[in-house]
Image 1 (tube, rainbow, N blue to C red):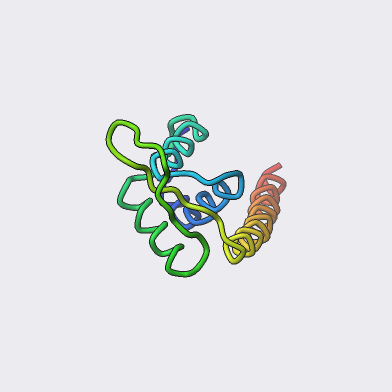
Image 2 (image 1 turned 90 degrees about the vertical axis):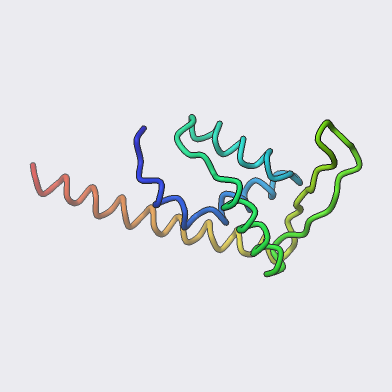
Length: 115
């Protein structure tokens, strides 16, 4: 599907928080999952990812730690969701439900007027 990728940029924090609600993850793992779950339609750039994670950490939503394993290429930095991050994710979910309801309402209304 060809979509305007700018639409997703305002929701990167929610995408990352939702992944961390499942389990602790490292950066590349999150970008890979987003790419796969989008069917290859959306690729989160490394710079965008780490700026978002740094901002989220500064705001007390997540914390980072170094993993114990040492795969080829060095240790991985993992991110963990904190209590404040769980609250923010709940807020983002409420906002998304409202946005989706509004869009569905008005887009369907537009279809009804043309009939």
